Image (cartoon, rainbow, N blue to C red; front, top):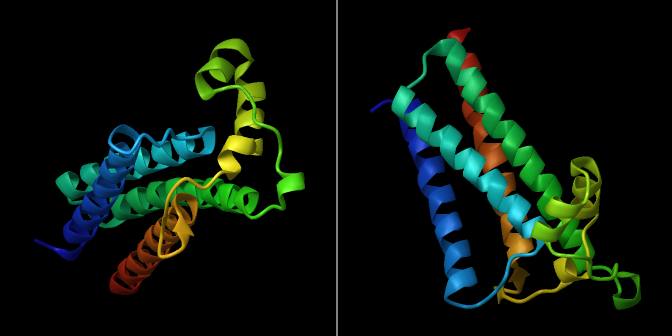
Length: 165
């Protein structure tokens, strides 16, 4: 197996594990994901699918950049969403926005762009911390994971560039 295939296979396994742990927290521990958590899951799903396709495809020179670009885009969006949630979690209690309607309700009732603005703005439920590990919340761990995926993808892409030059 070559390095490209191994890299994307590793990203696939890591993201699949993170998604599995999220489902465990939701279904076994009863921790309901807030709207920002749901969007972070969508980013992990996107990265998982991209990595699986890349591992199966074993891309040649220019396709590596397409898979890397898509992975970078999804992880950047994930960093932004997780960063927003971490920011909300660290606001003083009097500055936290009030809880809003649920994700399903917003998507059904409001126009798409209005719903997206409301979701990305976050609400009081997005600022709640229900679980920690080593004193980091789920959002903080998610920010770390998205950042590591971003850094690893940038590194591997720079290796691709050096090998082709």
